[in-house]
Amino acid sequence: MSGLDLPSGFDLLIRGGLLVDGTGRPGRPADVGVAAGRLTVLPPGAAPAKGVAEVIDAHGHVVAPGFVDVHTHSDGVTLLGASGGGSTLVRASVLQGVTTEICGNCGSSLFPALPERLPAMRAETRITFGGDVGAYADFAGFAAAHAGVPRANHLASLVGHGTLRAGVLGPVDRPARPDELRTMCALLDASLAQGAAGLSTGLIYTPGSYAGTDEVVALAAVAARHGKPYVTHLRDEMSRVEEALEEAIEISRRSGAALHVSHHKTAGRYAWGRTERTLPRIAALRAEGMDVTCDVYPYTAGSTVLAAMLPPWANDGGLAALTARLGDPAQRDRMRRSIAEGVPGWENTVGNGGWDRISVACAPRHPQTEGRTIADLAASAGADPLDVAADLLVAEAGEVTIISHSMVEEDVRRVLAAPYAMIGSDGVPKPGGRPHPRWAGTFPRVLGRYVRELGLLRLEEAVHKMTGMAAARFGLTGRGVIRDGAHADLVVFDPATVADRATFAEPLLPPAGIGAVVAGGVVVVRDGEETGARPGKVLAL
Image (cartoon, rainbow, N blue to C red; front, side, top):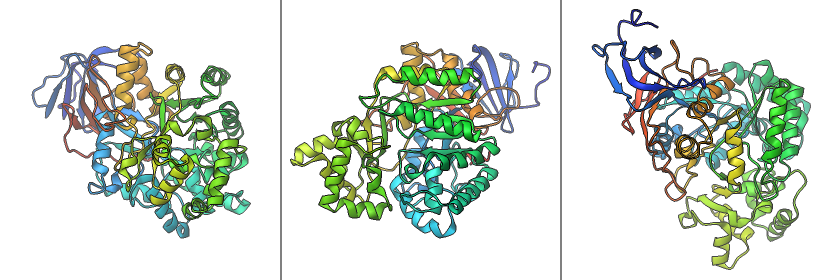
């Protein structure tokens, strides 16, 4: 747009910055105007500041699209409210420049379910989200619940396969009957039609792990009909990662759905270095025309629930059944043997790493355990690690999250550098404890450590992974790029100082170098602090 063709006025004008527009093209000097929630790109100095409600001086800073966090577990955090700790947790994402979060990952969403299953599922969600966030019949119900709770940034959600299974069959270890699979497909179809972003699976987690490949193919075919992706936490990211990747490829090919591999990693000592095989496999598929991408977080540790360290049979029947088994010494011995010897088709995180790599992130009734490994707790008590884990799970009613130090830096860097890999925090924002620092630090960490310090990525390439590439994968039309008419979601940061400050000891420390964040045309972060504005909404895609 030329200087002679300017709108009559702007709500916001960002002047003097280096525009990195999210496409991967080289940055260029430009000003950016915002009017009625939409963008106009201007030559430097073309627009007068007179009459503009707010002007941000971006000299020495980068102006980029707001970051899109493609992998979160933030489905219910705003629903917790301020008294439940939700406000602090939501703040961490916004302060690192994220203007859109995609939740419902790893097969776990807050919808859909048959009405008669909702009360039981509501109780189960406490374990995942640390509070009463509800369960919903469909995407419309989920969106309506969030509409009543103002938020600073936007939220989109996938449909979780594990939730579908629990919402129709319950938490049971058996194949779905044909009528049950038809019901699951119908529930998925309805939520996708209402605006859910795609289908996710978490095939290491129960009850999703109880499903065979054919069941997932049938559901992914529904996503394909809507033109939405199949997003998967592979059945194994450790010693059988290549086999698990091939299952995902088969599901994509048979269903016709685009494939997105969540937080791609090769974890555990038996899989370190296998990105040298998985990444060329993905690259070859793309060269053949297959639509396959992945995401990655820039850390060598992951985070999940402690119950996932136990064999799948232990979780058959849900929390009550697990608690009963944990109280039975004979069942504990069986769990010990399963970890030591393995179970066919089970990832077995502890068997691939050890209890010394599993630390407690959140145990609300036992905060003295947080930050310590299960092995250390066991040594201090003179007990077996499995017994320590079992006692903690029983005492906490299953509500224990952990951090697993299971990866090596070389593999993380290879995935980050892959041209089809985008960025996701895999953040698990849960009140209390010591959550993984990725929820507060992922995006500044990429920009500070992997762009500025290590030179692994060009600035424009990293921003593309965080914005335009992510928006294109998940159908975020008009987002992820800075161009005339695009949605006004923006971040302004200092490329010389941007850095993560969150650590495992202080996981919610805000980053350095994020000057301003704009969502929906409204400034939600100014000078590194929240403004209190709440323009965010649930996006129907």
